[in-house]
Length: 159
Image 1 (cartoon, rainbow, N blue to C red):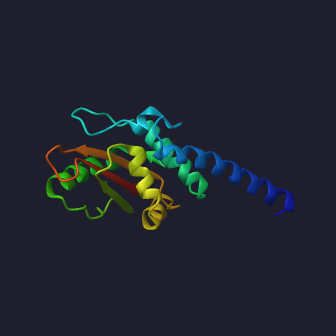
Image 2: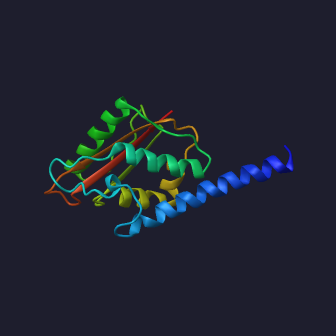
């Protein structure tokens, strides 16, 4: 590979990482540059996750670590929803189902930006978010107002 091609590749990665860093830095700020759907509170009956914005954020992160984009998979979404509801009712983090290559669970965060930041800032979770063999994903949240944490999040990855 030529020096020019390596330099160009490095510049493209640095530009992508810089753009993502600016976006992710706003996760902890009120009124930041995040899409409204990423900071919408899920701790109310009938709240709807902006799935497009959530997958966009996940895929922006994956691009900075050299992983390909995830596609939203209806079968994995169904698994994620069932796991989130079970997590909320039992208080026990779910086990990985056979249809998945990885699962991330979180509870207590009221919006996806907070949830994502928690995953991104945990080395084991960040490693799963960037798994190169993951190509499909299911994402769910479940609100249980009388539970210990209120909002429960599940990300199921598949290949």
